[in-house]
Image (cartoon, rainbow, N blue to C red):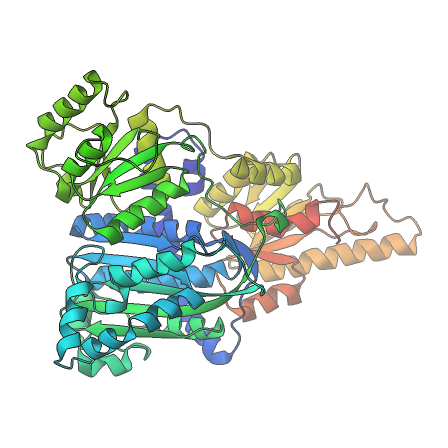
Length: 596
């Protein structure tokens, strides 16, 4: 139903609400599936997908899922992906998303101040940076009171939010070292198709008690009973995450200090996938970003280098180059060229992004007047748009900022783009051609096709019918297996049937067995009389009656899938089904170019 709502003409805020609700619904389904996953893992029956996917889009979705809670708590939630990480990877996007969602979800739950920071790097560079800083970190981590402990503690506060982190290897010095390795090498240069990612989720939460750290990955175990009462949860997420990481050929570990925070780090072995090698029909599900900002430049005022690098990362994704200064005074000096300050680029920035902790209400009038004075003196021909970056909704509502726009974090490319469209007065183009191409492919399959939908749930019928009709299909709905059989007496007119499994009176399995029996009888009679139906009179499959029947099910147990095949169904669509899944399910039956 939310998919249908998102296809309507919504305001940006309404669209954001609907997308957030959609992500939350998916998260609930994922939580239910986790319990089932545990049973699959223990039975050794969990198989991983190997499909192209966009890692950065997945992380944007995860940020959206937890954005409301992070704003409510006033904590900084951020993500950074190394430019060395390929744009498209080959692996299991659902399981990769599940691991990171579990880790970020735990961090959100146990963090009341500071930050949560997700980083993704290539393993070789991450290892180099770790080795370069390992001595002071190791001593500090083990709690030994020596001279290196003080060094580790002092640099550990140079973090995303300024709060000390449990793992000092994630401080600015190490982060800067990683960036230097990445800039000195050409992107994606490798002799191997395999790529090992290092993903870390750092928080400044309550940490894990020392006596509980040994059982963190034990199923259904929590630090103590008060943890469950205060924070909720089942204690199964980390256990499943560990299993999934190991199935992906990686390892997971953590560093935690009580009252400081925790940093969970895992590796995952995936494959590189050239974007040009991905066909139009493959559901990569990139979140396409607008090209309207390419060539623009920004000046960022931020005294925290890690946080500034995160903002630069999101600007770079939109094609915006940026420079960073620590204070507004330095920004004014750089814009005017005074006091020996100047911009590295000869192109003047069209926007001035300022972190809220570098701003005060007294600056409102003075900054405007000084910028105007600089323009009148010919020092800057363009007045840059002033955009304030705030971490919490309460900060946004504090006062009357004399700025052009306020962006409430967490940052992600799509929300940043929406704000910049408005602040810069750029006309926003229609949604991306990639999505239209995907929708067009599905429309090409379904246009004019007669589809029967069988489900006893009225909401499910409305969602299924609405989705199919959107792509040009002619849809007829019935609420029982018996009603379906009445419409499927041969000769029937349908090209496809979507069948719910669990229905009163006659379930989907029994209804499908009856359909196959009727078809078999009709085909036998046709063969016996040497007067079989021509290919144009029947649905498919070389002149014989065979209606493609796809199960609609929320049951992901393998035994259910086996039962679907056993009764004569041709496949299944997991409820609630999405566009990419529907396309995959129906393509081989309705696309004449696909083999039967």
